[in-house]
Length: 569
Picture 1 (cartoon, helix red, strand yellow):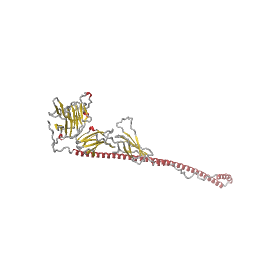
Picture 2 (cartoon, one colour):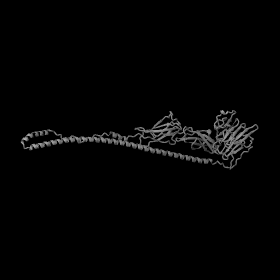
Picture 3 (cartoon, rainbow, N blue to C red):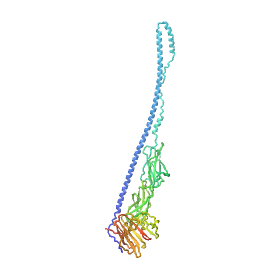
Picture 4 (cartoon, rainbow, N blue to C red):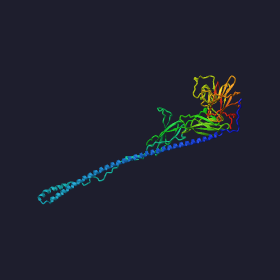
């Protein structure tokens, strides 16, 4: 009969400081993630300022061009009015000068005629010949009388003053007034989404108008962005809008964890601005769903797995854990958080012998989701479920996931639904052991009338070979013969020659990564059965197989007995 192993007293556990080191590393990672978030936020703000700078430049250029255009039109109109007025004055001057010139010519003709008559009268008067005098004096006198009878117009033929009509500058006045008319607003600038600006069903949207434009109201347009929608889709999301007077708006009745496209316009008495560039905002994700049957733990840590439950990817996840204290476990301690988890699983370092409530939040730019449904994790011992996708088709697993059955009826190969993960020769299944190089202990309840194989195997162990029959698995095998119960401890098909006199009903398995051992015990007798010495190069998984119809039950999450592990110096 094999003797129980004895534990060396007074030896310090090599894993005592694992939790402390892990906590420091977690704090460093948390600080680094916070710094990265700050840097990303500053980069986004710098990009936003650059957009604002360009918008101010564009608005200034547009207003300067608008002003220059208006003043050019005013100057052109005034110049046209000046040219028209100068032309009219020139025509009026010409008419006046022509009238005066004509009157001047008439006066000159009258003077010439009077001079001619005076000279002619003088010649008649000087004449010495009486006969000539009498002959010419009478006609001359008649001509003088007729000239004297003619009336001379001695008034000016034209008015010396120029007309001064009022210039019609009404159009110029209108143009000058139009410069002061409020122009239609320029396009608003919609701000990038800020952190924590959303809920599961609402978004707070902000925008800016970087000019002196007068705005009476804004209209915010938004619609759902469909992921992987076909290009010719005829079911485009409906565009909705909200009318507000402020430069911010909270839109509601949205879908959780969804992406929305938004744009905004500004309106005043003159008209409507161009639309802003479109921006993408996201609502807060739905709470994740923890896959409890895929979670596992050991005294030092827990591996939590979940599914997002959101159609769009999230930025990260936050795992929250609260220690349960008190004798009845109803008192909650301080809640700690593991932030910036990139995938849907997280390995958390914990303290041994405690209970924790663990939940998960999904996080995107809009903010964190509500907590998922909490699960309770105990670190009293190693806890795992079976990997049902590896089970042989003839193997059944109980509803609680800890008992496997092998029935009397054999299924034909054609009726078996097989894939690459299923065992095909050995009626077996693997367990989902947490990937932590520490000490792990679990127990298996067996029936001495059933042939079985229990032990550990690499995750990629051959599915078409028997457990223990290859170099990737180590197992204890029970064989029924006509004369006795035979037990083998197999690796690569080899087993030492051992005889067990008392058939174990409950077998304990103790896996020690640090010392490279896998030990088997008869729990009822606290009896050591066998130990494999192997420096495991990779993580191993518990394995369970039935070579004859029957059942076996796994017991885990229990504290390892003192005799299970030897303390080494």
